[in-house]
Image (tube, rainbow, N blue to C red):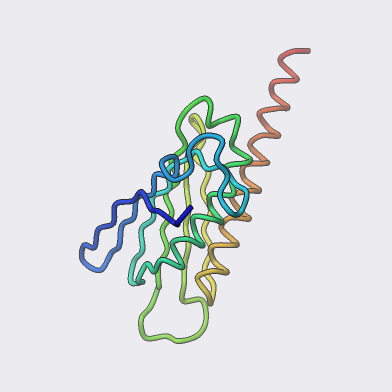
Length: 151
């Protein structure tokens, strides 16, 4: 299957907005080349940074891989992840010049992660890792609360 994007992209005042409805990309039961079944919406906002297809695909793969931790919550409601990537400064060439930020809510709980680094891909990886830890922590709390209530 060719890489088909179900997206809406807008450029407004140097800010790129990208809306990916991954449910249209990968219908139920279909796994992409990385082996993930996406059932979530991913909104990407790029500030002072061109959103290339390579970065877009990398972000979709990394952030989309979180869906395996969210299967239980996807059944309850739609999960919409807001991701913002930015170049914090235009004149610096080294240091932490790229920033990635992602947030979504599960029920009434808002999970959020952000990271700044020298490379946008490294920042995206760190944000994914932080969100994964947040999800695990939330699931453990919820599981502990449910076991206490049933006893």
